[in-house]
Amino acid sequence: MANDADNVRVALTGSIYMAPKGSTAPTDLDTAWDAAWLDLGFMSDDGVAMEYSTDVEDINAWQSLSPVRRVLTSVDMTLGFTAIELKSRTVTAYFPGSTITNVSGAIQRLDIPAAPGPQEYAFGLEWLDGDIKNRLVVPRGEITGRESITLGRSSAVGLGMTVSAYASSAPEIATWLSNDPAWAA
Image 1: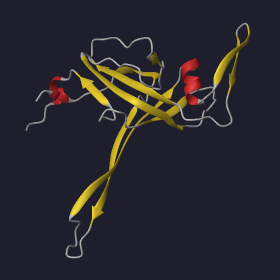
Image 2 (image 1 turned 90 degrees about the vertical axis):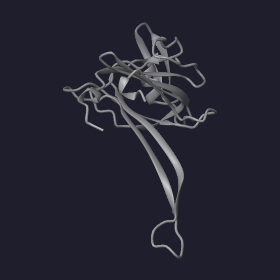
Image 3 (image 1 turned 45 degrees about the vertical axis):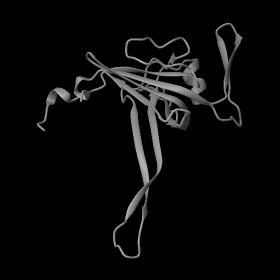
């Protein structure tokens, strides 16, 4: 098969969405995300890091120097990003179980719990390359990693987060939709 530069893609822009677990995601590329899916806003120009990994266990036999079989033992999928738009949804996502209350007028207070419980959500990722649109939906996930918040005068305050995808009642850990013509069989 020949190389084809027309099949090289970039994610020029996109959005990350977060919704209560169990929210209905769009099942096509034309339907807008409904009100349950909140756009997390501006992200750092690093974009989103999507990682998918599998682990296998080798089964060895006395009679063979190489494994006689490999068994899949785990699947892991994560999304990593840094939110630079500090709004209520990103701040409360970064600090699980936290709440924002109005103290008076324009003053808000963030209460960060000492022992937050698990906080599962649904996550959506959408990115564009010209007319090519991609959507990834993680129906069940949780923010399991948080980077340090750096406060400095020469860069935006960033909330670096890692979302871990969990198995749901469906057989998929995530669903990826694309109108990329290179995907056609």
